[in-house]
Length: 455
Image 1 (cartoon, rainbow, N blue to C red):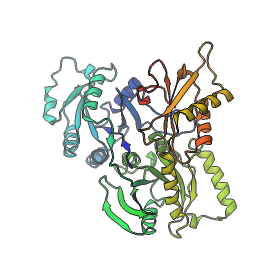
Image 2: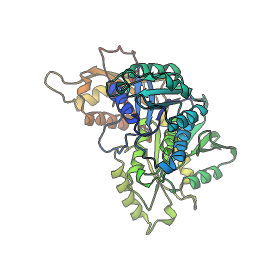
Image 3: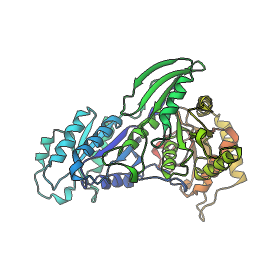
Image 4: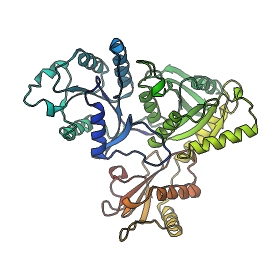
């Protein structure tokens, strides 16, 4: 299957050079496309950003307090993760501080990645009149000088970025279904990975992943190739050992971007974990298919049909922001429901490829609006006129054109999504609704990805 992978840009550097400030400044300036609906738990480590129609993931590796005696290891881990999973690396230094040994180490290892590397000299406002030519010794080009507090250099930085990243990384056009197995450490991802591979008619290929700690296997199921991706566990920040697994979230994000369907594993003995909810939110934001998988059901205490029903209700309440994601109880040891995961992934992939005629969509929109007109302000009531589906998008995405769409309440957008799913399905996959002012684009005008209003 052909799909588009958004580029990943990682900001790296030693502590207190301004990485988080740059992260926030770019998102505030460009109004990053991130979900703001209630019920989704997130960190501020990553977000989708946009500049002149080019979308990319921006990853902030800031907020890490590195003990002096373990600095070498933590920096190596940081740069290794960025090099493995990011498409572009931004190395940040301070304009008012001479090059440090730590800066040299960061630069050296970033350049070893052979990825595009930028040097960002930040805090330009504190280096008035200083000669910055010495930073050339780090060997990184291009060099962009910024001041996040004053907003200087940000436009140039983004322009330089979009010059080196493609509009979208187009994955190979084939019929292979790609499934990512996600979750915290020790929830049974590797066991499920092995069980899924062994259940199939034949293993086509086994190979180590191109990204660190992402194992891959290509198997055949019902006559179709399926690529399985087993990712390293994502740890809660409070559980992260010094220098270990700090940036595993970048690897998981990369796997999500490559996948069509994601399996989120949750330990039956440790449910209702906020980090699991965060991972589900990442999958939703990326517009991928999602299956909630309760693992280790064979060792659940007091398991029976009533226990399962109670747990299902509890999980549904905790994941109300992805009510469309199916829930499965599995055991990699006994093989319970392992094959069912393949069947579900195939069904979800079919739903993701569903296309609806424009005339039918507009009949549906008129009926939905007539049944429940959107509320608004006086003389500024939103009006929804027509809609079309993006035919070149692997994600089920719909453009809805109207007036005063910025005043649509998030609850009304949820109402439309619910009605859309009731009418056309799309079970197991995220759906994107883009609301566009009709005076900004004609019926088949600019892509909604260029608009600021999102579902």
